[in-house]
Length: 337
Image 1 (cartoon, rainbow, N blue to C red):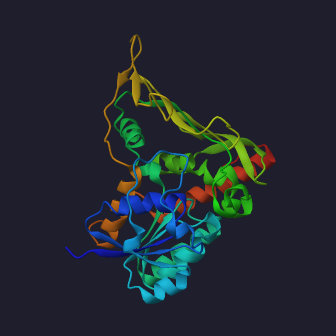
Image 2 (image 1 turned 120 degrees about the vertical axis):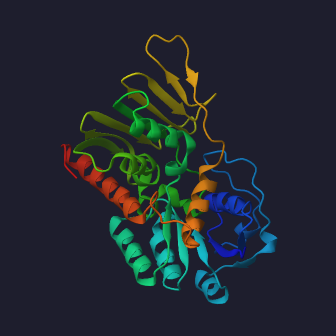
Image 3 (image 1 turned 90 degrees about the vertical axis):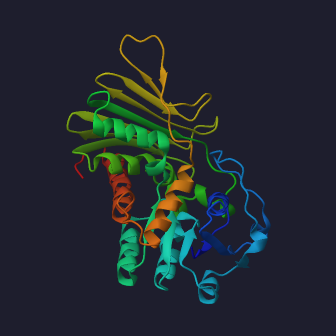
């Protein structure tokens, strides 16, 4: 099988994660890596807030570039993996797509829904693939939750609580995470994960309410939102003010059981049925969501499948919902999408 030639743009924390997963794919060849920081191109590893396991990627086998346009000009690429800061997602994705190159771009899709629209237009104009790295759509425990909801394995869903909390990021270049003009603040960078999964699972809510606070990024860095659907509520909690570390979790309340998952000591997917004295641990697929999402993307590039699981129109909608939450926080009133 002919290998797809891939370029990686941005070799920071998520760039290293994607490089390690790309190296595991026998039908993929990473031919070039681009980062404007020469020292970064020599870095062996960069810490991020989730342990992604041992990372093995030999950048010495690639050509390296400090300028993205030069890489696009000199390399014959089938796809680009875009792991740049959020405010650069749209610009560089559009540059690649205008050269006929398919793009996998990190979340959030863009700093605004309007920029997301521009990305969709470039995709359609150039007839290439565009997928956003909304990894929860591929996360095994969240896949199991969605299947239980849709199949009513434990009866109807009564309510769902999702939490994603961490501290301010100290390791990013130019401190870009902590500038809301570049990252969007915690509401767009962190909370968006749960927003996107809820949009993926349920679509738009009937109405929503939210409250939040401005943090040191200058944006909304701590918030709670409540989305109302027919028959159930979804509550989402997001914050960069959790100084202990990072934690993500969900608690789903069904008619016949409660389901819990979280990244914390002894993290596991659990079910507790009414009257039971112990939790049941549910088996889940032992595979990285970051690996799965890239495999899915490359299948669409090869034409093996249509992108039905992580369509760019849907991830654009997730950014729009975050913008709506900002309006709700400002107004203090329930709003309809």
